[in-house]
Image 1 (spheres, rainbow, N blue to C red):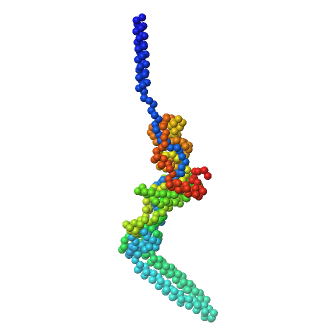
Image 2 (cartoon, rainbow, N blue to C red):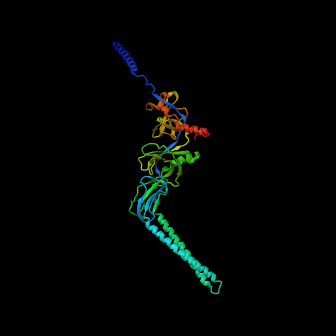
Length: 415
């Protein structure tokens, strides 16, 4: 009986201690964490200027390698190396004396033959007159005719030699065949130049310039599909970023696609023209300088003339993994939902979405490091910086206004 009381007492004490311990544990548990605060942006429609970048080079449309056409001593160089020259400008003066003497000799031969021809014509006329009398012979007349025609042919050959001598004399003055910038001279005064001497100097045209760039076949098909129905070459403009990172202030026009694909690179070459006006610079040899130089390495941006309207979100909202790109959207009960998306033509600040979200979806753009799928979040407006990055640029707005004024709409909108 005593043992039973003792057992009951211990059991009650144990239950009492357990209840105390449970109560203490319940009080020690922390309160549930508040949902993380995130910045959201509603997917909107906005105009985006489509752009594709490639590596290219500046090329002069006209390039002339100046060579000598005759063998002679170089008497004078009449240009400043590195300066711009005009068509017809005298570049080199070769020794003229031997060619002038040869020309005079050939002219004298023509004069001699012409004098002989005069006498041959008189003989022919006399033989023709005698044909009517007893002293006339047909053979004599025929011989006179043949002699006259032979002399006329000799005069033609001699006149051709005069023309050739005149051409060679003219070759002693080497003139510029184009407007352009001239390079350094390979031969100085006093040296003998010949047709086999090689290039004396090179001239390259300056304005406009070509900009050429290779495009992969896959990218070229994309460009053709994108712009072929919008005006082809006229649907795009060319912008150039110079080697120092500056964007050139002139725009170019695409005008050529090569007719063959390079087998070693699987690319096709595109070409456009871009202005290269002279800029005044007293430090240069001729007082002017141009921004673009032949064979200069540049970054080429091929931009659509007319912006397209796309479903857009800030680029900072785009995340990626091995399966591709995705975003987080605020769904029912303020829970984060992961959505797989496909990107269209985008910019550095704006992501164009072709599938995965709809107009008005609230996409999480800030606080992404705290977001987990299907977990509650505390949404709020995105920062002013994000909001500003999504506003249409002045260029987009201007182009859009021009399209409205002409009764056209940006490609991608409903007609």
